[in-house]
Image 1: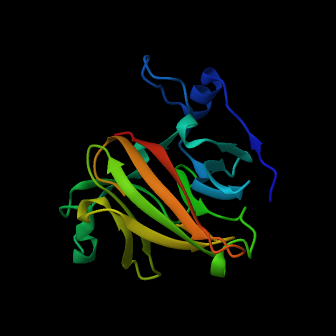
Image 2: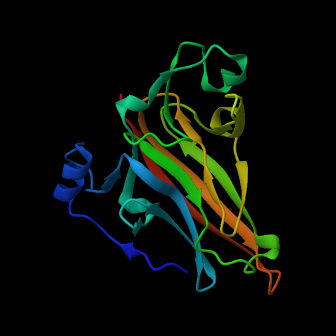
Length: 213
């Protein structure tokens, strides 16, 4: 397993790095708004899942409760008129998308299980379930192919839970789309079956996203 420094930046340093201000009554948190970040990092240690946020840019890991994952105003798009994108809302409406393909100015969200060694789980299979989304509007997670056609992995507007299948050592980048500005709480569960004992294990965490208009 990789050794990662877990870092909690002072509030002043966090705000200086992000250029963003948190509400005065909020507990200071690490604000991540650009660069390569595994917004859902998955490890398995001492018989339990460790769900975290892995800041690849600075080789740092944080507990989900320590971080605000931020979509800057530059992530705002117009919903395409293509019917394949109807899950994002009305054509011409607004959405904020953290992209599948890296844009250096925006947060580049990944889902990473590189810290889990092959053979720990049966068939190396892991399941990531998005259980609930609380926020001002819907969240969707989708991939796009070389022709721009989307494959929807998660759509909170169409009922949850939704499942993303991944694997030990796996890494996934997708588009994370929010349909209104504001704060979202995203509750996820990761589960798998241990190869040695056939025991099913799982872990749950809640992540905070902030969409700035």
